[in-house]
Length: 49
Image 1 (cartoon, one colour):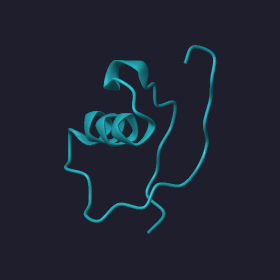
Image 2 (cartoon, helix red, strand yellow):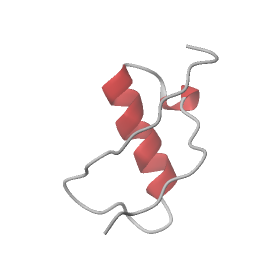
Image 3 (cartoon, rainbow, N blue to C red):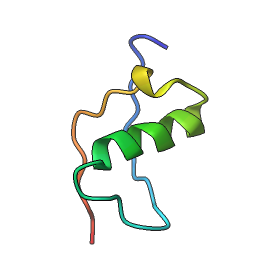
Image 4 (cartoon, rainbow, N blue to C red):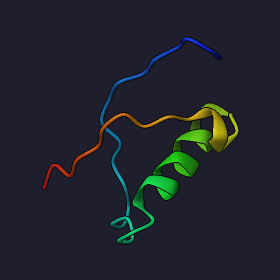
């Protein structure tokens, strides 16, 4: 899926762990989009609450 971009809000059931948040989020998104986590690049993320 080179060149594709997605922007949105992801609601999690539990907080991401400190220090591994980026990896966990990539894994979660990869599962949702049926991709390898290596194909996911997170440019920015922030907690809403």
